[in-house]
Image (tube, rainbow, N blue to C red; front, top):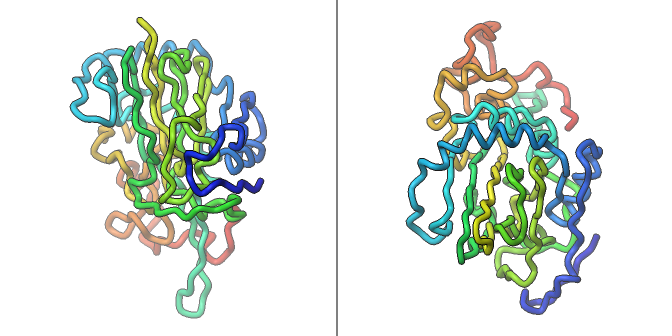
Length: 324
């Protein structure tokens, strides 16, 4: 899809923007990927059961209640947060580190495979995505919107304006976002708003609220969004409703994580995770050797039994091109 926009954001009409699609859980990943390249965001209904969301709420409620007032302009004062959530809630870890759809979509936009010369041999290396942030947000009735922003400014992603999304999906993004509703999320109680199509915008184009789409969801629904999209939490105009969501971002394997997962997640809890979760948390080599510990894969720091000998960090597939 080609989008030709007026020079000024103020002259863009909402009807000029791409449609944000909603799909049932189980939709093929390729369809979700296509929808993301067109609109920058997509909603997947029924990602998790309402019953599991109630269990998650019970587990994180004390953590949210212990949060203090936010002193700044990025969140309304009425917002309560719980950061590094995978280190504080086993259910949160399960539905993020253990959610294969999240990581398949992350692979599509963030995994990278490159080759390089090692003497006269052509070596291959894959860098898989890792967790960037996992935060619970409780938004009570408030008067202020969160400012529209791009989370990828954390990684200094200086984007140029384009008309169509690159065929090489890994070329543009540093982040993939995933927000799932723990409780019913509506425009009135502060649903995440974002600008469809803003993943194609350049750095100089200013966001505007007149173009906002509100990601309304039932408990267990998920909203996926490219990190290059302008978005923000919204004001809660209800009298007594709470908007309770978990916001997750994944990032490239060779970038620094916005949340320091190694310090935020207790070591004993990290050791209790399945190996696949540990690697998604960041305990993995970004091939060929970014992130090693004493010239070894950091996964051995958590589980020494995985050690199969002192050797180069090149993968077994280092001489064979990967297939993403």
